[in-house]
Amino acid sequence: MNVSLLSWCVIVLAVLAANLPFFNQQLFALIPLSKSPSYRKPVWVRLLELVVLYFVVGALAHFFEANIGNAFTQRWEFYAVTGCLFLVLAYPGYVVRYLRKSHA
Image (cartoon, rainbow, N blue to C red):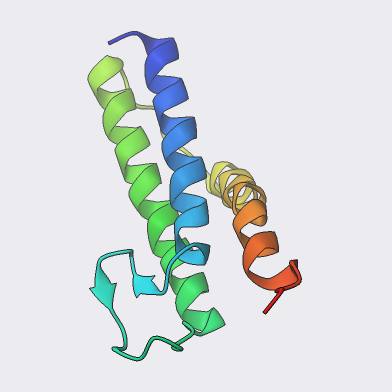
């Protein structure tokens, strides 16, 4: 595959993964946590999902990079910047879930 195409795939995957915890009430959009229709997933579960999905997207990006050529070693600065970027990508989901007024 093209390097540019794989880069865009990782970016789109990161946007989707960063917003996934905020747009559903299931664990990783697969495992129902409660049968009650009024159940709201706690914030700590959403944050835990966000951390796990960050590492999943990072592992997939590393896999892509290793298949293209040499995978570069990363230091703590790389993980700090990409972690902050992942939080910025999650902001639209956070706004929709917690800051938007509900019209119920």
